[in-house]
Amino acid sequence: MEFKNLINGEWKPSSNGKYSENRNPASWNEDLIGKFPLSTEEDVNEAVKAARQAYKKWRLIPAPKRGDVLKEVGDIMFARKDEIAFEMTREMGKVFAETKGDTQEGIDTAYYAASEGRRLFGMNAPSELANKMNLSFRIPIGVAGIITPWNFPMAIPTWKIFPALVCGNTVVFKPAEITPKTANTLVQIIDEAMKKVLGKEYIPGVINLVHGKGSVVGEALLASKEVDLISFTGSTLVGRRINEVGGRELKRVSLELGGKNAQIVMPDANMDLALDAVLWGAFGTTGQRCTATSRLILHNDIHDKFVEKLVERVKKLKLGYGNDKGVDVGPCVSEAQRNTVDEYVQIGLKEDKAKMLTGGKFAKEGNLAKGWFYEPTIFVDVKPNHRIAKEEIFGPVLSVLKCSDLDNAIEILNDTEYGLSSSIFTNNVNDAFKAVRDIQAGITYINGATIGAEAHMPFGGVKATGNGHREGGWTVYEFYSEWKAVYIDYSGKLQRAQIDNY
Image 1 (tube, one colour):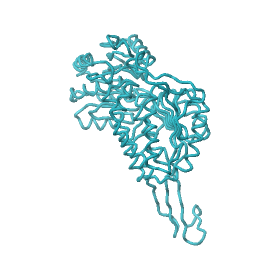
Image 2 (cartoon, rainbow, N blue to C red):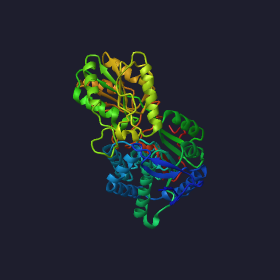
Image 3 (cartoon, rainbow, N blue to C red):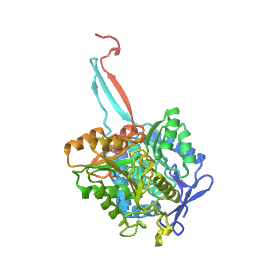
Image 4 (cartoon, helix red, strand yellow):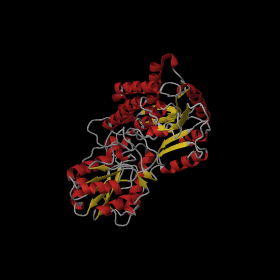
């Protein structure tokens, strides 16, 4: 089946008529999901032009009514949740329970965005002059270029698109080339909801979808002088490029980039709970999360026993197609991603004194040979300066490091260029609060895994993880709107502020 772009309310092929194939990573040769446009700069410019025209009308739709559109989106997504999740697992590999969670996060974000349509509050302040009133309002910015990754093909686009729309912006959406089907479904639902809620007021071009390569579609969005803001989630390398070009063009840019997240376990922790958490954090989504637990920092006193139990549990994890029952870990999203994981495993094997306890190879038994499966892998005796402890792998590889006390654990955790998520397991309240204060990360969990952010809370990191903006919760609405100050003088005479009136 050949899918299309949505530009100015019309589903249409790319201007060059070219397509790329989308295949199931668990059964690559046998399951072709569809063919999707390999769009051109011309397609992007057409979509941006449509979004610019639509903005003139969309910004005038009352914010609560824009919120009503998102409420309808949430209702449609809820009704189709199992279908969306099943197809998402086909497309990117993670198990059905996780893709249902991915979809539910989109639903939660839709309902939250709908309510924010009635909460785009301004702030007022008293004037320093008599018979004068000072007000402020949040106003939309213009056309938003949205560029999203493949690992959360529903949740992450909704984090960006829904707030953008509620604030009154229009959108040109470029999804990951690896997961275009979920993007098509999302945009089709948004367009359907707009037609239902707005009726005769329907505005084509408010939401536009352009498939294709980042080197073409993403670069065209960056280059367009008609795109006012860019929101990107992906690699730090690409993020630096976007920040450089966007800054030169004075675009507003939000970057959500890499992570090298760690879970600390202290001797007083609930060990069974900590074990469950690291299994989920390291190998959920096959380790393909920016918040995945890539490092495990264990106190010397509990290290050996904890590792023994961890390896035992990891060896019992069942790999397979994520829509089959009983599967714990799906495939890597692509052959290239699996090869990257294996390259890092080979690096780990050469690191001084690091030792691999389990995993470390392609999984090819039976049906696993049909897809891009990699065995969950654990390294111990990893040092903070090892590459497998420093660099983002984005796969099912866990590095275990030792610490002597809490200060040492936090020092090890902070010793990376990233600062997204973090976790500590302890029953000592003083240690917990010290960790909250001293860990350099945008997210810290106490007695929880490094994964599992909630839709109504700020999401983002520090250092090379981003450029300071946050997604999720109330904070993201600051990115998609601008402040306008208004002064109302009813004195009947010219009053001069910023002149010495004292």
